Image (cartoon, rainbow, N blue to C red; front, side, top):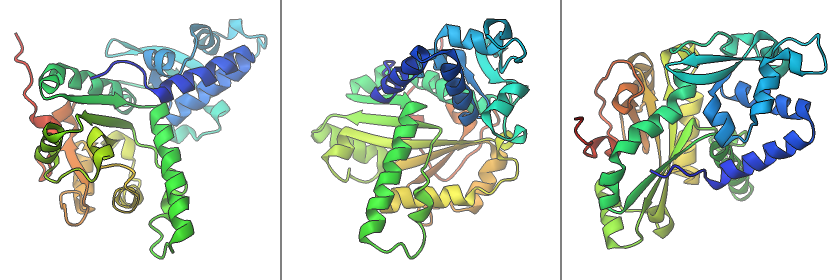
Length: 312
């Protein structure tokens, strides 16, 4: 698994650096919106390395004495969740973001931050199988944040291009014109030869559609945990991924990572049925190191079957 930042992370860093040069307030406002978009909190390491946020900007958000307006309250706070430093919005920060207090975590806990921490935790879970995959000349790149925003922009462009040349009678493409923002992406890289083609076939049960998909296979990953669902409907999101995969080909597969309570809702929506929801896979959060109780589903992601090194 590659640890280096991808192009989209580097672009996001450049944008943030530009805001830093324009003044502290611009940089702080950008971070407030980044946190709000992520559900109210993010690991500080993600902000520093994937978004280009400076330590000074974080300090200014959490320490009102560093701002010129002494009446302003701290718009973010620092906490430690499972030994990992996180930055989260305070009540003042939520207000500044323009989002609803109900939808953002003002007092995060290990449970409420499972969603925000999941991409980096999944990347840690993948790391031990890196050597085994290298033997097969296969790479996995786990990426989130800026790259997911770029994926969403691509989905929007593809949707409008498709609508211009074909009628959208079902409305399946219309729901994608507002974008589609997965929680993280997994990029599978294989050699563009017979060995790579065989590995793809063994992994997915079907041959790659073309040489580009063989060389770089995009897997959109959605995390659905009971503490985040809050009774909201999941059907629009499931329908949107059906359109993204079956009509646009924006991703090869979508992997839904859920706890048992939410999994039952997704199963009722067809996620355990390859004929009803082709390309959509359901696995337990516990199976990839994200906590909770493990459970069996009818679908399987080949990554789960890669031999893991024995713990000494």
